[in-house]
Image (tube, rainbow over all chains, first blue to last red; front, side, top):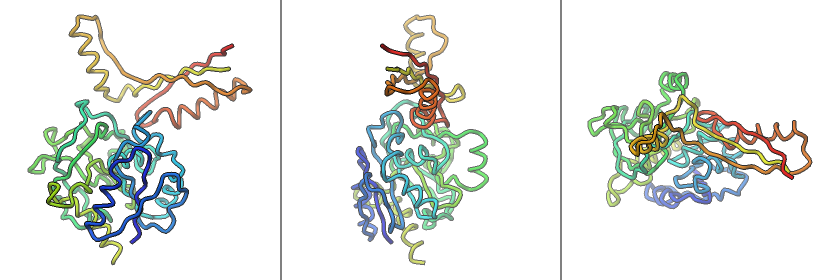
Length: 229
Length: 83
């Protein structure tokens, strides 16, 4: 499986991603945002960070980077795209995923471990998890408050496109389990075809006990096993 | 030269916690404030030689596709001729 991680000016989680793939036994490569082709890659990762300083809106300028038209082409042709944090923001800005990410409702930047519930364990990104499994994965964002209009939300729910939800330790998707005001506690969504995932939490920061846990490994394992089949 | 003054604001249906915080602070200071919404203001200088219609078309494109995110924001602009 060929994995590429796009590095935008201002990305700051791309090396963590590279290291996480290494830990999981896969080699990944960096793709500079000025490249105009992602041909040959099976998976394109849009990493976390502050691309273009989050100027204008998080992800608003990165979506016009030279590499993005081909990332969109790759996605439309069924190639895997995984946006983490800023990568999720870029995916909503460029229209590969619906909705938008607003300022956290409490106005604070949050960097903390967060419980998530795997809402859909039948995706290319989550099949290594059990349905409804509770995992702990760090979040690290100031603008992760997921918003979508009522019709869009209904569509996401009906089509099983909410992949992760913020929950309490015992798995309740309540206000107490919601760190940033996201609508319906949504922390990750996929596109209709199922080959594009965007999520605010950082699984790449949860692949080793040394850094606090291994609950994020499931996403990596899901992607890797899918390819072997 | 033409200068465009662009305002980008969150849609009324979108909660604006930042505006809410400013509003609360102003009220705490005793100011007669009912509500505050925080938005963005941009000044865009256009290149010369465009007709008014071309300027407006360019601005619609700029505002609708780049400066605002239609999922959560709306925009308004005014154009001024500068000598």
